Image 1 (tube, rainbow, N blue to C red):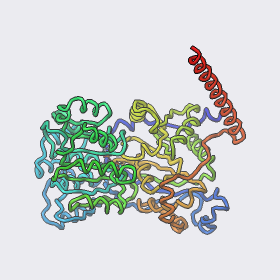
Image 2 (image 1 turned 90 degrees about the vertical axis):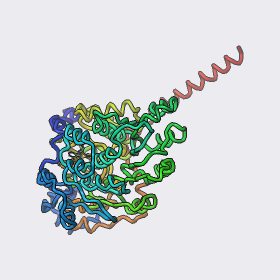
Image 3 (image 1 turned 45 degrees about the vertical axis):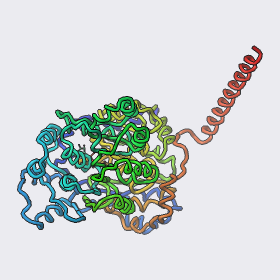
Image 4 (image 1 turned 120 degrees about the vertical axis):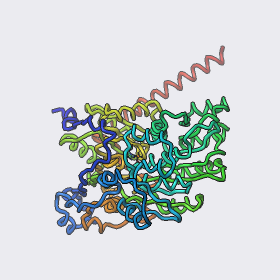
Length: 554
Ligand SMILES: Nc1ncnc2c1ncn2[C@@H]1O[C@H](COP(=O)(O)OP(=O)(O)OP(=O)(O)O)[C@@H](O)[C@H]1O
């Protein structure tokens, strides 16, 4: 029997999921959360699980947890839909915020909005904004939008922490559109920085929709756009809003292709990632280039470690902080599972088992490196599964094409690295599989946040091996914060030390290659490959020697 031919047999693809971009935030059943069924296969060496815990856990995962109000619960929006009445007093505001699970800290906090209409009535937004919101199906603000928009409209610095898929993008875009409602041809007045090109492109498209029918000029800083602006200084004046990645912007600033001196609104999307090593220097340069004394800074992310907040406060003026739901938790509509797979090889077996027993794409599979992404792709591509792989070694054209195919439903399974973990909004993703255990709680929250977006339900499955077990508690804590019921023995697991956490963040766990080829064959295959490469190199050397000898005699 050709086992691999059967791989896709259980997969069912539901294209209709992609059609309903508008019907988001409809009341939805609360997902029950289960934890891992790792009892039967636990090896003796993993005795931190303990016999007692095995008995307690049973073999079927945990009981569903009691329903808790979701951060951004859909039914709440519908109830509030026609309520345009201004708040009568502070206690009404407090009650409203509590109901929507919005926590705000700071001084002189502006009142939230209840409806988008209130943007025009109370905050003098231009009517085109409402028209475009309606055109693209945004009828009711989400909690982060309710509170973040009035704060930004009052030109206050902001640190906003709200779950993945809760509408943070629209929150900062609308705030920008309050200030930039018509073209002025005086160069960039607002800049949005995001860590990846894919995310920058997505924000750019979103902004183009919201400004449709207006002459506001939005620039997505690509290599070509930067070159154009370098050639023609008049081009630099033409644009009002810039969407960019940090490195591209720093290059443009250093080469005199971008002038940020008139920027009054700087948004750092996925701010915690931008304020980590690797990006921090670039963000520093961007801040230095935004020299206007009236610069307003806004930070948005689903995860905001305290260390980042502290650092952020040093560059902000009297900021207001919003937290929607629980801080640093995963979205509550995601059904999260941990699956023990024993050894590395168990992961492929588990994926195949899942596919055979009924698996509902579209699905994202996260691995920890480009090499592993390629390996997994080679394992799955021959098996008539509609799969592709995306990572930073692919060309920009390939990356764009793959994202497009996944969005349109032509691609069922997308293998990816951390590149796709943040911000990317594929509305219909049914399942996220963490093939490789994430290197931090932040990474886990963002990866699984590619499903269960905008009030939808989703599934997240995280494989772990014996090597990952010491870090299990990090993920267990996130699951608990997100409302999952966790068996007692898991709660008793030892927390990894800060040092261990840092080590893992820096360097992922070493793993065997992803392959079904037996080790012996793999050795032989690698040996054969080595011999071929050596002989190729030898031939090349001989050719080079022959040609240099030829040219020296002639
Ligand atoms: N008010 C709204 N009504 C309906 N849909 C909305 C609303 N606001 C945003 N959305 C939709 O919700 C989805 C998620 O929004 P968005 O991408 O902004 O999430 P996010 O909070 O930035 O998530 P992440 O942290 O993963 O980046 C998008 O498809 C967006 O169009």
